[in-house]
Image 1 (cartoon, rainbow, N blue to C red):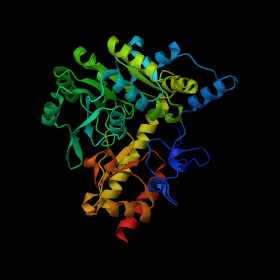
Image 2: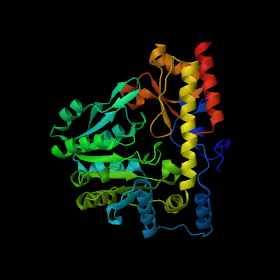
Image 3: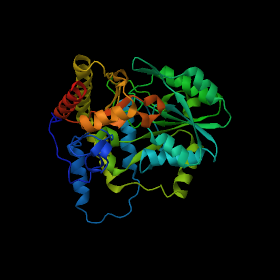
Image 4: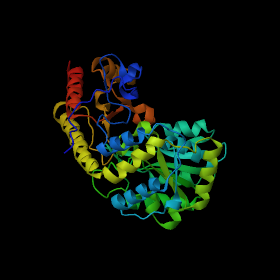
Length: 389
């Protein structure tokens, strides 16, 4: 059994989450529950592998070894029952850098790229930074449940200037796990309109119903061939600071274009220790992950039940995946500035303002519940006191 209740002091470790100087999330006395890394120790096998490699005192340029890709190949077979070829794979320092590379590789300046909002805000930033135009298709929300807007998607994907779509699967911040039927329907729309899909599946391992995630590359061959998928051990095993991720596609032309652009942009290298950690995590971290998922789900249930019983004006559905809760504060009837003052100055909670994920997120806040339960108890008691006082 792993001890996820243990509080680990992260001060003095150069932690963005705990030590960044940002008054919105890290002001004096605030509990930081924002950026998506976990306050849990990673699997022991990872630490052991890193220590073993660190004993060799030379840390020069590494090769991307076969075992590194084998470990992901084995993991995909084990967790998703899918067979992939190592020839489909390449790697970059992170999913966000990889998305930057993909945008440049698959589109031209002034082309349009579609995203489904509210969504992880670096998508829009990457599109704009690469000189492309953002096209937003709002997800439909009913009582905290989100669906794709098929009519809106069909209308926007047929724009001949829309060349690319970035899909968040599972979705951050709303926590949806898209069904195979939804993904096939979306993929068919993209194929019909010649739109390439970038599927960001960094949260794929963090699903609460085993086997519920459908990798985009397992859809029909025609759909899979018009897509690339990003995957990483970083969210799953709390390795974000090691900057190592994968991209895979069965389409050799897309893979070649991606690799060529990564080289042009200087993004072809990955972290020596990141590779060691990924191999150890995928080969020896499954038991740790299965226990983690039970704990995380318990945290989500705790938040949902606490709000329902003690602060019914605020709601949070239990997500189907991720360790990120999407809290709805709209029934409080507060203006954005008032809500932020309540949360940050009165309750002293460092959450992500939902408006940062798109205008559809106004009135929402994203909470990272990947922390010891006692920290969430403290956070909810602060919130209750701030609202009722």
